[in-house]
Amino acid sequence: MPKDLVLITGGSGNTGNACVIHALKAGYRVRTTVRRESAIAQIESAPTAQESSDDLEVVVVPDMTKDDAFLPALQGVTYVLHVASPMPNKTDNIDEENAIAPAVQGTTSLLKLALKVPGIKRVVITSTVGVVVGDSESEIYNENTIQPIPHGPFTEAGPAYFASKRFAYRATRDFIATHKPTYIIVNLMPSYIVGRWELALTAAALASGSNGIALSSILGGLMPRPVTGITVHVADVARIHVEAMTNEQIRTHEDFVLNADGTDGVVWTNTIKIAEKHFPKAVAKGILPLGGNTRTSRRRVDGSKTEKVFRMKMAPFEEQIVSVAGQYVELTEKQQGQKA
Image (cartoon, rainbow, N blue to C red):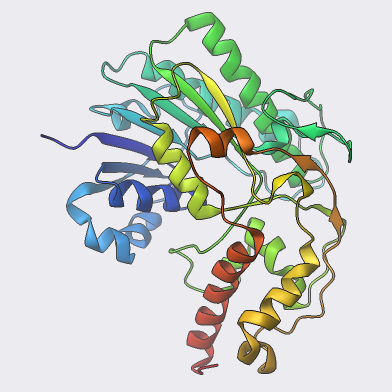
């Protein structure tokens, strides 16, 4: 019996690549999209791709906001994992046209095109916990606490990104109400995603995005402002994406919050103790210099619905940090030609 074909957008990013890996290991054929030709070789040369080369196809979609951008890639597909979402560039003035529209158009155009492709059963969208988390430190946030949409102009890329996700979520709900698709749409709302990235070739590349926040304190860094202490392991995010395609408890369009460690959250500077415990030689050699102070802001986020439906316990903060810090040490040793 032929294997089902999964389209995974954004296959060169940390989350998208983790989804590619998990889907291949779960026995699916995978077609993944990238924006640049150079990313094809990057993905195909990775260990997992080498092991499953017959089941992996990488295609270029340079501009996902175009109406028919994903149509060729959708042909023959049974499931879609829409992970790709443009991150606004750092600039002094990020307007809604440049920061918001690409995320919304990329999502809605894919959903509309999926209506034209017979056989598509589910579309799983990578949203963000920022869709449901507000400013209160005491309120418990979950799938039902949808937040209002902020309006620009935005002066920083981070707030613009979260706003774009809120716009895209609302557009998805509007699409469901208007078009009533026969396929099921699942929105996954992860907190800060932390963990090993197979495509990272340098320590600097690994220490970017959410991983950069997680590594900040053990690398002697200081974030400019407090960061919400809510995290989830990238491996759990990938697993949930893939299992959401066929989970029999999901019978209609549904949302899921992905957040580990309960509603108490995490403290970013606890990474220092984790590093001292698991990587004492790397600390002694200065690979992990410690001494940073990433301040934590508290939000209470409940991911228990997800754990119940997917019958799992998401990996705790310590396991997440061991994953990413361990890879950081490996990459640094390789670059320096030394062994801790």
